[in-house]
Length: 418
Ligand code: FAD
Image (cartoon, rainbow, N blue to C red; front, side):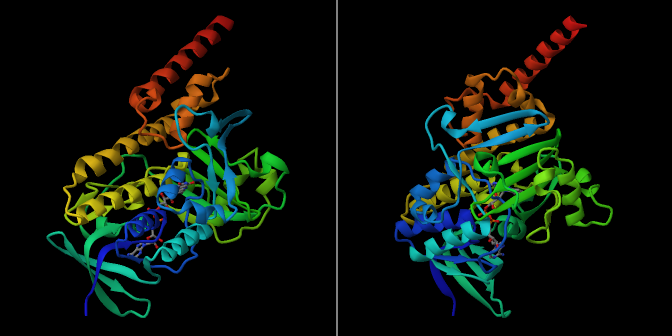
């Protein structure tokens, strides 16, 4: 017998959970299929404030507040002796002033338990292996842990399968990212030398070389996530025998700021190596389905935008799905794909300009320009749809032009002192 549901969601990560929570608020029947058993380790531990809006609107914030996750009021970037700290309360425009830095195993489990509490039918250890469409109706084939398969008919399908990229693979709508290939290796470390106060809990990104940086994300449970990111060739060369542990150890040794704190400490789990992580799709929706979160596009971890895009798209998709189920016309191109692309394009510029070094010029320029800083801060907080912010509206030129100006002034200063 084939089961029936209104909405089927593939994946119980933040994107799937936010979508499910919103749909349950509208009394829509939802089945969520998750191929793993939570808690499970996944990367993406530094959130940005915009996602707090999504958790609030989906009725999930109260569940998260109870968990006592480490608060993240901003972020610090380090380049040798130079330090640039962003404080989300000092940003341009409206918006949330803080968020959390979270072990995703606990965070995602909290969200998953919350959607079950709201009445979603969440099924762990059930993997989507095939989807067939007939008009807008889909039939999804599911494989259980014991190898048995069964099918579910859905009026609407949300693919929130993250790195699983279920529909992009099945429908062949995967597309290469326009960003250069980068890779990362990370683990958690028992942070036994964590300094007292803000220094101990400060989320930081230590720039080893223009395109290479180490992340340090302290959690409230005493563990800290440490990861290295860089061009794939660079990361490969950190080890001679493909040993992720050796590669991460060599990377930590390159961080003058953090080598004493983490250099000789054991790992909580074998470091995870994520190769060429950027991904894109040729389209984000079709008849009877939408892709959300990492199943659509993943850029780069440098500005921690991944979970925010996952929750923004999950919420947006759920809202539009409700309209469609109610028989209203939905323009998925304008109201979903174009909208998401607007935000993605802003972050794409910031990621690209980070790796050219132009954005780093702005971050570390002295004396700081508070006006510029608060506008960049709003982008880093995830408010990338606010066109009143010139650093959103003119993202494709403003960073490059300002960096050019800074370099010219530097060159003039250098030549006048010679
Ligand atoms: P996921 O969190 O990946 O969840 C998808 C779920 O779908 C998974 O639980 C998976 O098991 C399930 N699934 C997959 N296939 C199937 C299937 N066939 N059937 C059923 N279920 C399936 N983002 C940040 O915000 N902050 C960061 O600091 C950050 N750091 C990152 C560092 C690196 C190196 C990388 C590569 C990414 C980072 N990200 C970060 C991005 C972040 O990991 C993702 O953007 C985020 O997890 C996306 O959420 P999601 O819900 O779309 O997918």
